[in-house]
Length: 239
Image (cartoon, rainbow, N blue to C red):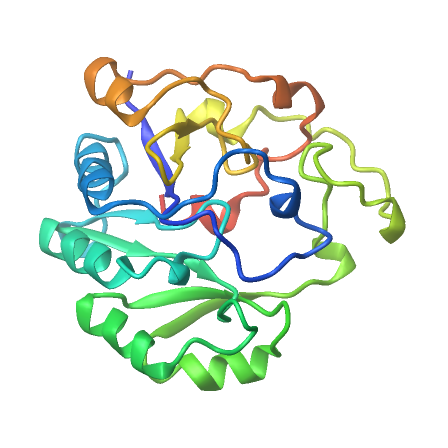
């Protein structure tokens, strides 16, 4: 069976501690992906069923849990992916560890390496501010805003009671990750079963997938999950 690589986590450090995100309580070690692991990930994408888009390139996201711009190797990663014939993008909150916008010079380096577009999250900077800072360097193809209607409990991983969210029924459709046989890769080369799997619970590594392929397997998180059933369109549309 073929597989699709949904996301590659270039870093699981984050510059923010949002109360509506599971990242602040993440248990697995923090780190930045190495160039060696990233090159393996590109081989993984080349062998995947990620569809070929315009220009004959496959596509993959360079984020999972963490801020991609915190990895100083990100320009090298994008340059390598571009040279390998793979289009990449990522979602970013746009700010560094001090809460300041990443410099435009960094965005220009990323653009020069081959980055064409990005999704931004307006956690502590306004959408207008983010678009003005980045938009004439790379295309901003979407902005996520922290509004109540955009929140969920990450399959029970975050206590959202303070936001009084309405009950969320389980949609009457199968899991996107099961249907499409998709997964994410963590910074240290482990396989996460989906983009809600913050701890990387599959028990597999990218070396396992390169050697033996991949078939979706349920993890403990699946028992409480109401997500990933048609609501991951911002990820799926590109795949």
